[in-house]
Image (tube, rainbow, N blue to C red; front, side, top):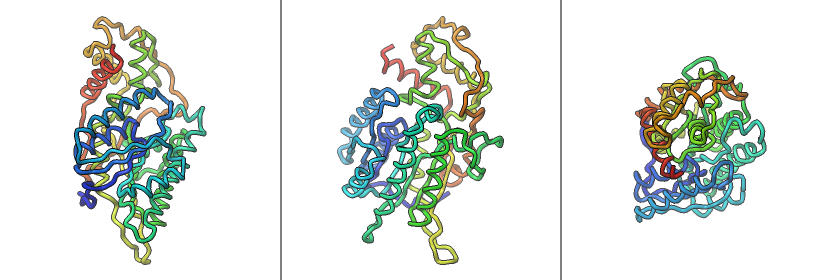
Length: 363
């Protein structure tokens, strides 16, 4: 197991994408687990999906922050693509740990709206890297660890499963995947050139309460409630490594405290303090089984009536462009270095989502 070389207590942590699904849950997880701590969050609150869900997440953070007076929560509405804005945040708050979760998400959206991916995922991430680099100016301690979101999408149509971080990932099948692979390459270069300890995390299909409405489980729920037909791609032969959001947060918290060590090579020059891990359930579920459990839990929560005719509302269709038939994480490195493996069952996770959905939408 890797030594925990960073204490989060009394530190300033910058979380980008703080109103996002993973970001907001991470802020809450840190407020519960670390005291005192100062958390600075930034999010541009864009309307890629229903902004009211982002506002709900921020309210939950505010409520939790109010009950933890020893800690401090600061929210800034802004974009990481705004270089001056990013520089001013680093200058004012001097974060010790940076978790970059701000990104334009979604595989299919990248096919029709590429501009926003370049702006947020490439320019925005570059701005974060530059700010981390200059945090050491004047002999300052600066950023002790940069943790950033990558994605299982980088594996593209790799035939070998489970996906390992040792696999070659040079053939992305979407622009979104290409930007995430680019993030890993950029972070590696900055780690080498400027000795910035950085860790990339390849997330595998994250789900849970107050999640992203563009994700399949959320969209399925909306359509089933309206009586519409849901389309199940690849004729139901897709398998996904569904990972519950609380498991993701626990993994991120542990990784934050274990930065890659700064070391010099035989030539006396720094070896890049750089790492990449998968975070997934390492237990892929068939999409048909997933949808079946989802509709059972929606009935149990009272979102759908008990006599709902599920069979009449599903349609098996071919694969969509940019999609892959299976995602399956090899998480052995995460288990070895951080003694952590996600363990929330699909039924428990979908039950929590269904209960949240019923309350949030007052079904």
